[in-house]
Length: 488
Image (cartoon, rainbow, N blue to C red; front, side):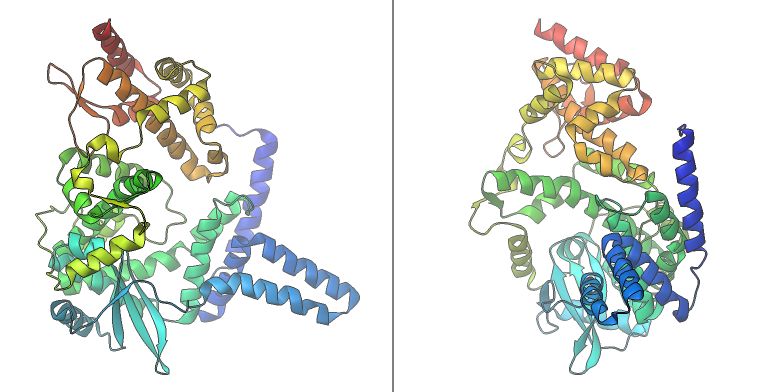
């Protein structure tokens, strides 16, 4: 992309400032705390600016007592996010209730050299994390395990995940390092805020501290390999990615659609498991993960999965059928986790019993949105105008009209996010057009998979994504013309 001279000058100036700041980033506890402070200031520029303004005023007037209120405000706003909450997340799992899980944890802790008191809590999401808590005057640890991992990973894969998390006790245990990692995560999250530091400055600081975040993760992966084996560690990484994508791209949209109808699913986790048996679903999730891998990893707290797989020596592990660890209170835990994600007063339904269209947002909504964004009288005309915009290289404007918040997206994600917004909307309209031309649904769990009378398969979302990426709509136009001939 060509940058205008004036903009290039501003970017160069910001980059020089970022270089000066990031050059101060070093190793060791003494400099780690200072680095964390710089990251927090960049993550919370308003609070940092208020503190600096107060300091200037006080220095000019000599009224140092005036610093009390702004300093307290800054400390409350910045440090508040680092303070342990009063209520721990998740549902506790006691050894007497789950002796098999307790035995697995005991075995892994012994091999990892983990000697601190440890408790386990199950959370509803795809998550695994280890955190310190105060317990009886000493430091104990809580291991959070997501129910999707407990039911979706094989026993040796769960062992690998637990080994990785317990290894963090050894590789990122000091308070200064934890503060630095928390500050870095806050800065990465702030890149999507309306009031933020310039992306070039944020990216430079994140890049300068990337090894501080990635180093402990890669070291923990090696402990996972030592305890669970390279094959299990590799499979755990890939399977966890698939589960994370499944809940983001399937479960969350289902919850949104049902929530708008004041319904709640009784079988959310079972439905996700069933969907993952559909090869079209798995292919779509892998495609989404491949797209995600194309994004900049500057602000990520973990290395890319490909990097981690290479590190453990399993670049492309096979995924056999899962035999998870049997949990004696599994039904109770599953029901509790489901209850945390839904409105308890909503009408209960079963996703497995619903027709596919009732799990998805109506295509008519996408048609109306695309018609408004393109000024077209109907969805079909809107689709053709969208294809024209793609061929002309003007599709970004249509995407912005569909989702104005794309303007504030970080530069490294804006292009792909814009494509996803436009492709998702246009794919739903293409689905309408093809169904009107006699195509039939070919997947119960993935929207937009259609089959023609002569046996051809069309994946509308993939077709639109490829057309936008290549700025070549010939294949999509051919399908639209064919469907219209069938209607005529």
